[in-house]
Length: 116
Image (cartoon, rainbow, N blue to C red; front, side):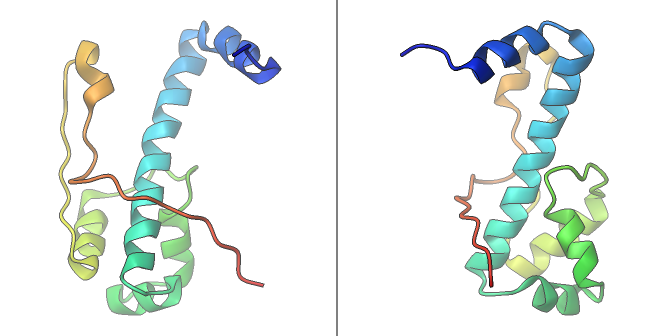
């Protein structure tokens, strides 16, 4: 299969160490956001429902589920996990092993749905 223009562009951009680091961090934030949203949906909760249970705002839950948000605190992640019947597990690994970093107990499938 041939590379798309985007694939070629991304490979080119990833040669820049600053871009590569930002890209990696964005992937980590994306993973956390998707897991929170998937667990919330699996629990049958809206963002508003989860916010009520956590005594916070719906906007805060939206922020936690945003792939661009990197301000997750361990305290908040623990609170969210408790309400959603999950656990938080963070692993720090040497850089050469960073590909196997674990951000949670298990990967959770996420399907984006837009409400009209």
